[in-house]
Amino acid sequence: MATRHILSIDFRQAFVPKIDILLNEKVLVGTGVTSHETLRPLAYSMLADLVHHVRVELTPAQLAKTVYIYSRNLHDPSLASSIQTMCAKLLLNLVDCIVRISNGEGNESYHVL
Image 1 (cartoon, one colour):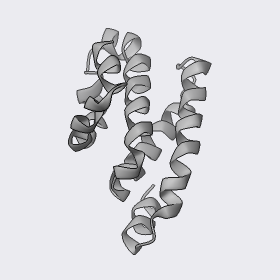
Image 2 (tube, one colour):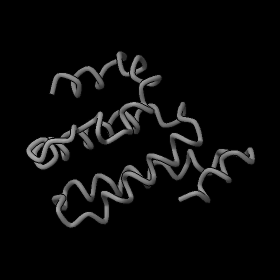
Image 3 (cartoon, one colour):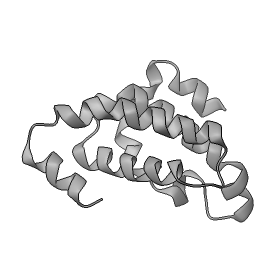
Image 4 (cartoon, one colour):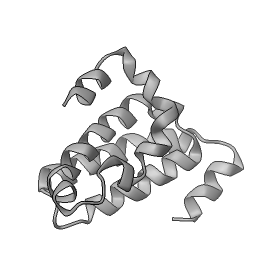
């Protein structure tokens, strides 16, 4: 919860260089069964807040990884419908950033998905 409060103010810019680390599920949630079941919704919700606020600063590769993770969560029946809705909203907000990428690197990174 403390991280979520930090992300609601200007300190969230300090997390931008750490996006790649946070997009790793083993780092974000851990490997334990209990943490996977109880912390995963809160962790992905916190990460969605961060990504939403710094989405214009993400690289094409980071955007591609974010789309992959949140579209996977969107189709995960073990997650609550509120978390799936949050995933859909984040993906919708990322569309503008994806469209703005005009170089070839952005288009290539999405074909990997």
